[in-house]
Picture 1 (spheres, rainbow, N blue to C red):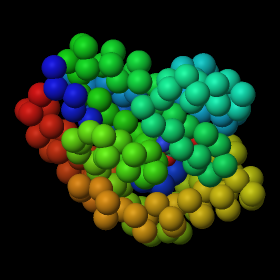
Picture 2 (tube, rainbow, N blue to C red; picture 1 turned 90 degrees about the vertical axis):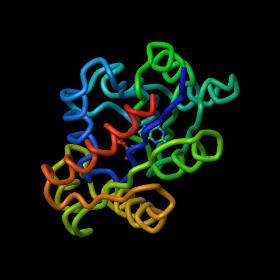
Picture 3 (cartoon, rainbow, N blue to C red; picture 1 turned 180 degrees about the vertical axis):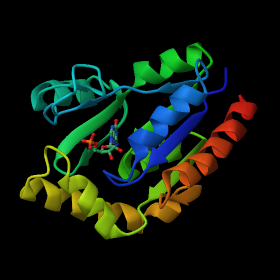
Length: 187
Ligand code: 5GP
């Protein structure tokens, strides 16, 4: 069993979710999109386990003490963490683990595992602002926090093994798909 990871890193609103949805359609039964935990509240259309396990600060902190997470980080004011059990389960089944993760979490995992990491860039910082503005939680304070995090993340993009600019979703997807195929061949 090879513990191979495929991290998809990049600021909120850059299109990571759309890219991962396409990967799941193209590689059924081969890749596993981890369900992670967060302390942020649910947005309309979300539910427990989709896309996160939603929990209180107290519960999250208890789980960190129990060493439940493979990594965790504070991302624009909320805590996010990857359960070790999610990874173990996927590896047991022989899946390639694909994770949507922030750069801090990605750096933590890079220390412990050999992995492929792809940073997805927006074509321009203004395009992120536009995307985030359309989201239901696009309230000003929240938006400012997300834009601050985005700038910090972009500065650390070179830490990832590959970088892709999402100026056209189809083109960005084809580049990503090729990298996933290479990772699947290594399994
Ligand atoms: P959102 O709240 O918009 O769904 O996600 C915010 C950010 O948290 C995303 O950019 C995503 O990459 C990151 N994220 C989601 N799950 C995890 C996780 O388990 N660990 C870390 N470090 N970041 C995560």
